[in-house]
Length: 131
Image 1 (tube, rainbow, N blue to C red):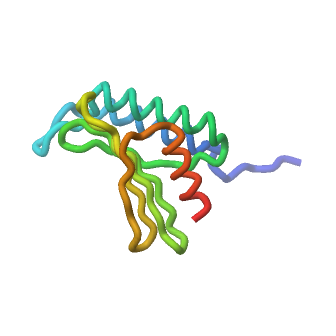
Image 2 (cartoon, rainbow, N blue to C red):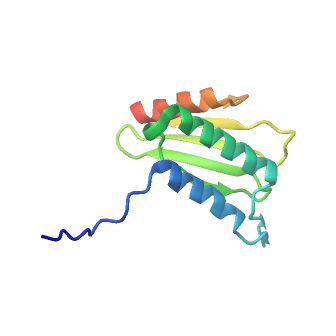
Image 3 (cartoon, helix red, strand yellow):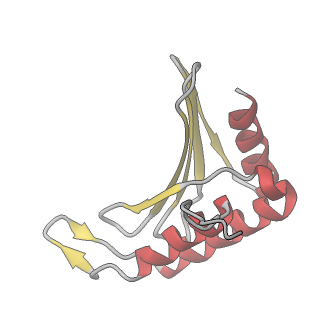
């Protein structure tokens, strides 16, 4: 008896997140609004934080979307759509002299965390998973 597999092959959240980060490097360098590719410092910081957070969280690491701004900073966004809806956003600046920050919100409550470390990122991603 043969069983047909109609589902797509499983892709872990970390694999999807890393692919999305790497895809930013494959964008055109610029468009009419500014820089499309991330700066090297933003990319290295984002990769380090994501990989280190995954090493701590394992399979509970949530999938993120990735984008750049007009200066080459990277924004990673984790969303939880179920009630109460919540979001965690990590911004890795294009300029290595600027600090990364993390924005988090649940419904009408929001705040910004500065001086981001892997443990702070993990704390807020676990918060997102539990919320």
